[in-house]
Amino acid sequence: MFELVVKSAFAAAHRLREYHGDCERLHGHNWEVEVRLAAPGVNALGMVLDFREVKRHLQAVVGELDHQYLNDLPAFRERNPTTEHVAETICAGLAGRLPEGVTVRSVSVWESPGCGVAYTPD
Image (cartoon, rainbow, N blue to C red; front, side, top):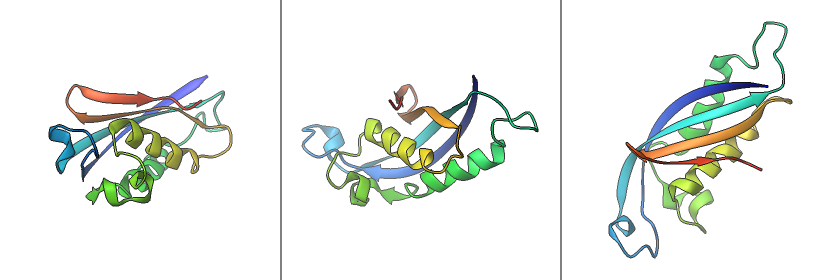
């Protein structure tokens, strides 16, 4: 099994509804994202997937979040835009863009240095 690792970042604001603390107020983060993709083998060139292609797919997904008020986005209208839900949303968006045989192993999202979440799909 091979695993590719690609990182990205985006800036966005959010507020956690019914949190009853500082994070209930509007605030922003410079989010960092790390994705791990897995495949059982490599192609004829010896790659799972060209890093440029992975970066393009990841940028398309995080680009929908960048410089947004996350609470207004469809993915977060009914659920809080927590780091957990952001990671899950990025995972779902990326999974739908990958070629057959390549899967998302995990998505890690940090909302601040030292505070992050890793999401692993079933």
